[in-house]
Amino acid sequence: MNELRAKVRAGLRLHQLNQDLQTAKKIMEAELAEAADYVRSLLPSPLTGKVTIDARFIPSRQLGGPNLPLIQPTSNTTNTTDH
Image (cartoon, rainbow, N blue to C red):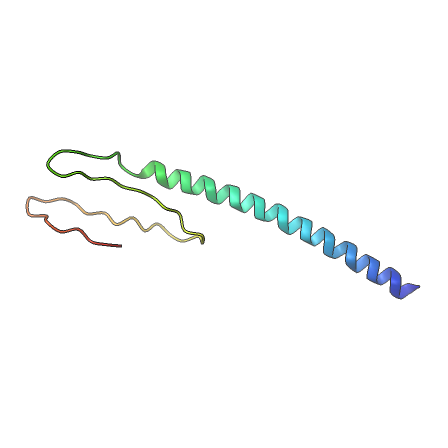
């Protein structure tokens, strides 16, 4: 009888841990979505003229540091870099 009680307690504990994990996952996903929105808000508006410039942010599936390649235009800037 003690073995059965131990198994039931272990099963209940696993169920509670799974629920806690699912809750933490939902919170993390919401925070990552908020972070992606913030990074998108940092991108400049499209510029048009002799050259059209536009920026897009596509969030990765894993968290990482900022990686926005910035090019400061000069009078002799003719190339762009791919990142």
